[in-house]
Length: 173
Image (cartoon, rainbow, N blue to C red; front, top):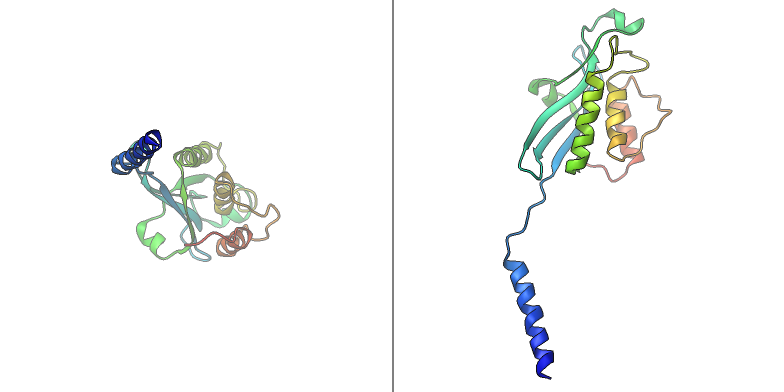
């Protein structure tokens, strides 16, 4: 009987000890995907990242893919492309489609994706084959969400984001 009570006290002490020990907070990064259906400024589809990694590194930025010079040339074929951050003003006028929390590993994969697109040989932007929606679609797939490989919305970013939300009902702002 004495052993029984000693075990209960030991378990209780362990539980109290764990409860009083400062825990390691999980540091997630929040990614928000945006679209901008029409306009003269690009990119029309992009994402922002904000938060802190487990090692304490602060994360803040935005990434989209666009033509270096927006001109009628984009209608006829490939032109120089660039991964760039939209301005704060542009972001504020864009439609936030959904937000997800990502792990440190997913953050590294997303940044590798950004680097890969930055390093694509020029002329890298093509309205039909490699535009802002393709860039965002690849990022969404990297994070493990469903996309429609046969989407008809590669030139309609807001419609594309709505389709992604239908394919992934748990996505919310």
